[in-house]
Image (tube, rainbow, N blue to C red):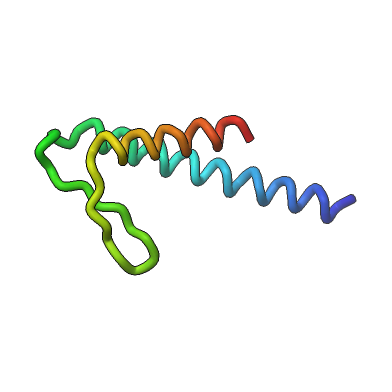
Length: 68
């Protein structure tokens, strides 16, 4: 029982930190001008991404995290 409680608490902390990070990223993306370059880190590589795509991806991630 204690193990389940610790696992649940740990998972909750992870989701909370991911949600806060995603909210911060979304706020920053709203400040970016449409002509700016946006990059996404995949492993050790930075990939160029279109601003609308980046915003949509972060929004979807936030929706998923909030549904958990």
